[in-house]
Image (cartoon, rainbow, N blue to C red; front, side, top):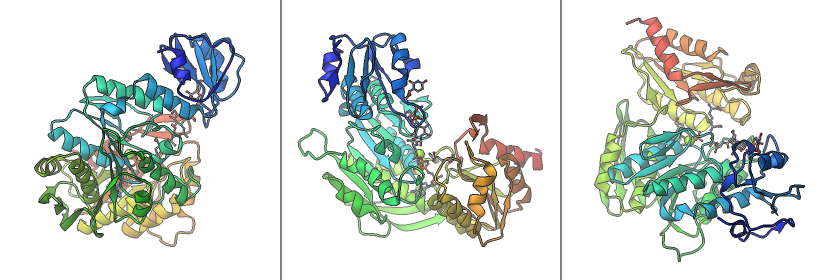
Length: 489
Ligand SMILES: CC(=O)N[C@H]1[C@@H](OP(=O)(O)OP(=O)(O)OC[C@H]2O[C@@H](n3ccc(=O)[nH]c3=O)[C@H](O)[C@@H]2O)O[C@H](CO)[C@@H](O)[C@@H]1O[C@H](C)C(=O)N[C@@H](C)C(=O)N[C@H](CCC(=O)O)C(=O)O
Ligand SMILES: Nc1ncnc2c1ncn2[C@@H]1O[C@H](COP(=O)(O)OP(=O)(O)OP(=O)(O)O)[C@@H](O)[C@H]1O
Ligand SMILES: N[C@H](CCC[C@H](N)C(=O)O)C(=O)O
Ligand SMILES: [Mg+2]
């Protein structure tokens, strides 16, 4: 692609050496520059990419896109916002790949990963080639790739969407985090469907207030577009039981399809039964009713099934296919995942790391537990501090004994994090065991027949971040060792 083509897509200022070069690719990290690339300088939270322009040129960059004048001997394009410009350049460079994909974006505090996997099951049953991007991984067909962020930077997104088009992927499911929406990582993504699962407290370290958190989430719906002329028909799929649904609905000009359990909505669930083996409900749609008997547990899983079924219905997937897929699915890695070595008590690993998800999971366990309920839980370091006391109170409210421990303390002192959790608590049914392995061992040692141990917060994670170190750690493996240590087989 010619540099002039790139520079023509936005208002900019340039230096005198503006030659019309061939651009081989885009780079945002000087260490990943390849000869002929344009280097885009991004002001980060840690460092300023402008400081690496010279090194990028040494590594082969032939042009630079920046937010200020730089003393460089290659063509320089200066814009007011390089993050926005990056999204525009990346979209253009990769020829707007999302126009050729059915793209379903999912936002909300809880349930995004779960809904992407349910959608993947449904669309695979519908014989679509699918792809998925989110917290656990990126998946293109059956090939998997590691991701650093739930919703990665626009350059990563557009280059991989382009790869998906080449791989003949038809439908893509992506989690869209509030950070990504706020930081413009998803500018230019041409969604067909945007899904709102729910909103409750999280990420108040990043967003100033719940209002600005909600506003960030609503951007997915305003970014569905204001035109009715495009070739794609667009739908906003919204959980009407969530108190924030009206705000989300007002944010979009596109068709809205609602789902709910309690409220009036286009698609609803009724006759719900929940037990230790799963759930059963009637899915009521304008095209008819079906009964779904699922292995997924808890009322929150009904919401996730409603969200995915609604998006599938908007895409023309037959109800019988949706039923078959939801009945077969066994759930998602690290979400309400049992660890079973034939022991007489239950052990469940789950990714609940917000007050709302912890409450949902604990009330679900309470509803079928015949014995005591124990929970092992901590709160992440360098993350929303205001959720810490809320999570601790919920843990002690619903469990017979809560064991507070470390969950990715990052740069913080683990003891301080736990102090934030327990300060002001008036419940006494808790213990503090800082070391997560010891905490898990203890919870398994105290469990008796019919008791249930919930190990919350890390789910699929296979690491514990302490300071700058990423140490190997997997709740499921630790639980398994603890069970076998107690009852060797
Ligand atoms: C706070 C935040 O969002 N940080 C993101 C940001 O990192 P950063 O701002 O620190 O980047 P930086 O290190 O300052 O670098 C700035 C620029 O200089 C460049 N650079 C840097 C060093 C160098 O030697 N050479 C060089 O060229 C970098 O490539 C970059 O272009 O840009 C990186 C690349 O896109 C992200 O990976 C990183 O996410 C970090 C890991 C993170 O933890 N983000 C969290 C808060 C986040 O985004 N979470 C949401 C999900 C939340 C949820 O729903 O649960 C997510 O979508 O993941
Ligand atoms: N619809 C829901 N409502 C409330 N809680 C839920 C819902 N779905 C899942 N959960 C709970 O939240 C946890 C996280 O679920 P999931 O990973 O699907 O959410 P997420 O939105 O992708 O989270 P993240 O923001 O970390 O990416 C689950 O382990 C479960 O405890
Ligand atoms: N995406 C979430 C995950 C939190 C998971 C928990 N284990 C933690 O590290 O706080 C976040 O970054 O806030
Ligand atoms: Mg997720």
